[in-house]
Amino acid sequence: MGFLNFLKGKKQEERQITGDMLLAQLNGGYFITEKQAQEIPAVAACLEYVGNKVALLPLKLYERDNDGKIKEIKNDKRTRLFNIQPSEYFDGFLFKKMLTKDYILHGSCYAYIRRRYNDIEELIYLQPGEVTQNANTNALERYINYWVQGHRVDSFNIFTALRSSVDGGTGRGVLDDNPEMLRTAYAELLFEQKMVEKQGMKKGYLSVENKLSDKALEDLKLKWNAAYSGDDEKTMVLNEGIKFNELSSTPAEMQVIEARRDNHDAICGLFGIAPSVLAGTATPETETATFETAVIPPAKAIEAAINRTLLLEKEKDNRFFAFDMDEARKGNLAERFESYEKAVKNGIYQLDEIREMENKPPLGLKFIKLGLQDILYDPEKELIYVPNMGQSLKLGGENKE
Image (tube, rainbow, N blue to C red):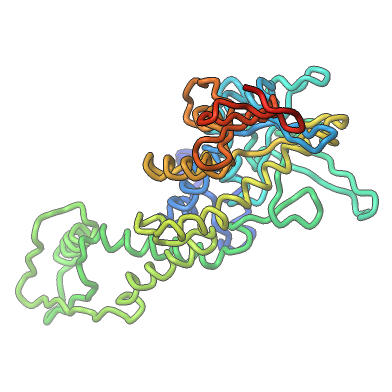
């Protein structure tokens, strides 16, 4: 009866189990969760760098005419959704950043496309854990079914970008491909945390000359635990006959700091980022190389998914979405103006095109310099103007005064 009363009076422990926690247990605790990975400073810094760079890229819609000329289609609702406000609770920057993070960590990113006929009204961000899918086993006639929180969703209304996928339905991220390295880095983080909590106190054991009474032993245990918990700043005084014997640090403990530095650089390599970029000491060449290896791949994967899911079938022949990579590559003011000067000098950009990139109003100067800094060309009218001579020349025509 007393035993039953004990069970009845015992408070029942309640614990919330997430999908990541369950998967970790099924893998013998070897799987590292997203939350644990983002506690590693190198992982958090790399995700911030890549995520912010991709989030800065404006999405644009282009059209190719019959002559092969490409022009930008402005004021399209889909670019406004992606760049400004995809849904009620997300802005464009956060939306692109979260898609990038999920793509890198989990190998897949998702959004629900809320349509009204052919019109897209919302792009609702979905966490990878909220989406499940299964596919048939026929590789030649594959189909994939999606569920969002248990509700069946047509694949036509699912936006998804996949990394290292072999079936077109699931991808592999850094958490899947490199769990050993991330677990090691996380274990080192926990080790340092324990050292900090102990306030750097060295390990050791106590030896006594004479047997202690039960009361003295219990008092010693309480003081010992208080001293090593880091919560008590009082100095512990040992009674006569009790001696502290210090244990020497193991080689593994002595090399933790060096190992953390090596793992930091290795983790940066997983993301394609040079460590000097995060440290702020990178050269322009290193910055450019890191942009190409770390930012462009996820951006192009998301861009391809946009063209696959947001374009109508009749648009796919002559229209396409693309990120404006120049926006994230902008340097400081001096570097940008130096680049603009070269672009104008070589006829790559017109003055008003540069003013538009700098969010300035146009001046109506639709001319391209052809040389000698005194010959102007109007591409719309196909007219060459020579200010020094006061003449203009129509291509294929006669001189005009």
